[in-house]
Length: 283
Ligand code: MG
Image (cartoon, rainbow, N blue to C red; front, top):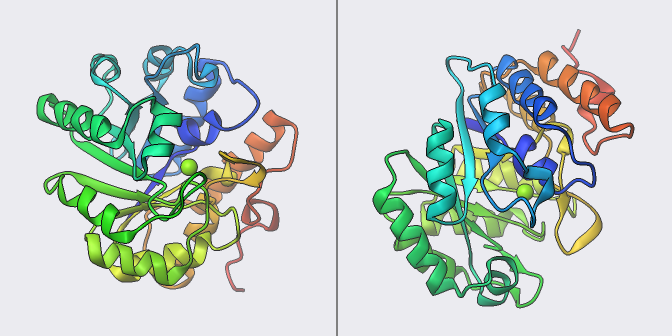
């Protein structure tokens, strides 16, 4: 199985603070030192719309590359892809929404337009592509999302790594299990907005999705629920999986130290609990 730490991108993008590029690069380096196999390091979107992600090139240039870690970034169009590729990342994450309402609010385009944009990036991309389908379980504007719609969307990208995202954190384990089985998507992106995130992660893994997104300390918020938590925390996931005998390859102590560092940096408690409780070796 593979954990992708999305803290430096999806996490920080949804936090109120804007960290300077050198600190964002240090976060990436600390995660790599904790042996995260994949890290979402930066976002190549317009700085005026997402100031937290400004100067992505500077972040990427400051990273100390570690062998064994794949560094990815977010792009939403061909221009973003070109910037990402020029910066030297290893993988592009492209996102499209499962509903028209969410797609129009977030990307100012219909689902069909987003599908066309994704297809053109995938066609020209020299880098491996991950396609994240957001609001795959529920939409803040349209309510529950028909699994058939998500399955049809995923089926249009048969040779691309698809990640099903519970963007607003409404899914429960059976829904996750059934959608992973139906779409055969290899990955899920889960939020712990309603405390179902970890149960959903176990369900996804058991249903055959070996790629799990998470963020150190549970960094990130929930769009459309400003007071709610965001991504599932990477430490929680590592603790849970390793305790169950599933090897993650991640150094839990180094990860915990990273979240303690982040807490000091942000000056407030993070959502994760394992970094505060500490790892427990069972003896
Ligand atoms: Mg997220």
